[in-house]
Image (tube, rainbow, N blue to C red; front, side, top):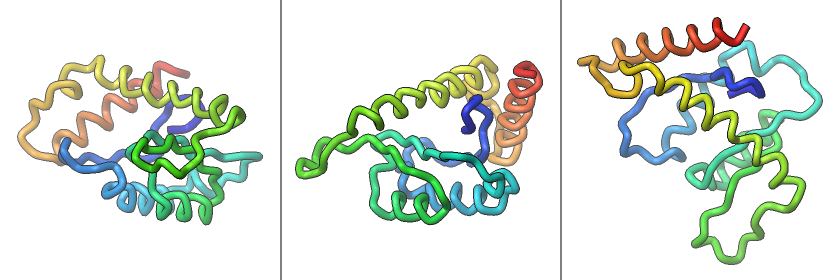
Amino acid sequence: MDAKGVPLVVDISEGNRHDCKLFERAQNKLEESEIIKVKQNKRYFLGDKGYDSEKIREVMKKMGYETIIAKRKRKANDVSLNKKEVKIYRKRIIVENSFSWLKRYAKVDRIYEKNKMSYEGVVNLAISMIIYNKR
């Protein structure tokens, strides 16, 4: 998501897949997009505990993002987020709100479609409507 809550990459997968395993597909789509080529002052990758991985941190750093990812509790020796990072991480509510906007559409919230391609079309249509209404 960008700072306004518009998705940069859309990837549909099974609900029981871990975020770290799906990251590579999403990262490839992000690299292919023209959006990433826009120069900005600071770009942040805000991730929840599901993205707590050194590999993800390294990849995003190479792509020019500063990573702010919540730490998993079982990594006891890691230092959690500092005050500056916590202030930035709170902006992650934009991501949560975007998911909430998507779930307003019944066909996105409850999967009625028989195959993945049809469901991706419904999700993309819902995203398009959200972007149109934000203008």
